[in-house]
Amino acid sequence: MTGSRQPHAMLPELTAGDRSRQTAIVALRRFLNGNLRARNLQNFEREAVPAFETAHGRKPQSHEEVEAAFHQSPSYRLWSSLNRAAQEVLWIAVGEPIFRAEAELQAKYDKLAGNPAKRGSLHLNPKLDGVGRVATLDIHLQPGGYTLDRGDKDVIAGALYEMGGRVFSSGQGIGTGDSKAGCIIQFLRQRDPGFAPRRILDIGCSAGAASCEYAREFPDAEVHAVDIGAGMLRYAHARAEALGLPVAFHQMSAASLDFPDRHFDLVVSHNTMHEIDDDVRVAMLRESFRLLTPGGVAVHQDVPYRFRELSVPAQVEKSWDVRFNNEAFWVKYATADVVAELKQAGFAADAVEEHLLPKLNGPGAWYAAVARKS
Image (cartoon, rainbow, N blue to C red; front, side):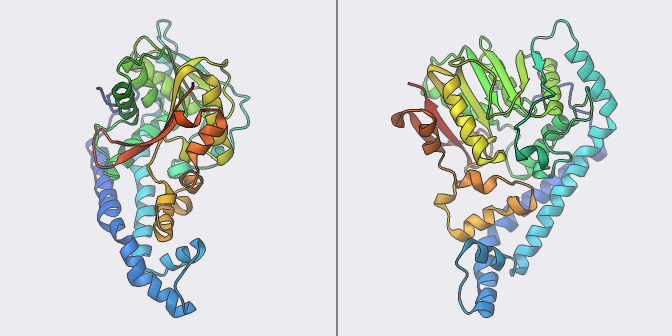
């Protein structure tokens, strides 16, 4: 299976200096998120708890007290400061080659989007509203956030997302051959070898990597993809065209999708749930049910952090991104009962499952909530 990191024309050329800086960031992040972060809970018990006990005469109990105690650990404060700095430097290393090639990227978009023989389509809605708080955040500290849009040829948001995601994932230890969409496609084919969806919807498609994989792996299917950012979608559209893959991109909110009932055989999302607020997530799951044909399948994949399985100190440690990386909805996702929400959306109780699916490349697994419409 071809991975999502296939080269294409919308990626800017990197100089030796660009590659060197990005390689250095990957090495630093792997050290911080591997060697050092693994010690955070040990340092909490060794440094933070004694300091809190000295000040209060007892151990920390609530989430608020545990978080306060964490910041009494010198080792944790050092890791936290370095991790935040590494994320900021990541965007410098990623942004320099992209902004240097901005005019070239805009020209490529113009040519690909204007090609009369193009295979896909782009449908923007400048009056889109109701997108929620995500539009006000620089999630992951990405400059301008996911909805950055500076003109009718702007593709910077998508370029930052794709290249930033590559460097970020490598820094997390995720292999270059991993693919969230590939993981789900493999799962679906193992589960039902004859599964052949006619229409596929990718919700929260960002730069379009997953959307393209579905178009490649199901060439007879009609693939649609939605996101809220115009700049993100322009890039995704040009990316798909550069790869010769037919995808229809639409600017829509996950909470309100302008497609008819029972229109899709497969509805997916990839790492979308932890980027949206509770009400948007619940509405997205409800829309998944509405849009599926009878017998159709919804698969909502995300990071595997489910806080009900963690101790309070582990929950607080995993919540670092909320305070320091603009992941405003991280804890809301991690504490949500996605299975219950899918049932409330209309799926039968015996048709909803949770899975931890091994990554295609690299350690760990992806979380997937799977539901079939009866």
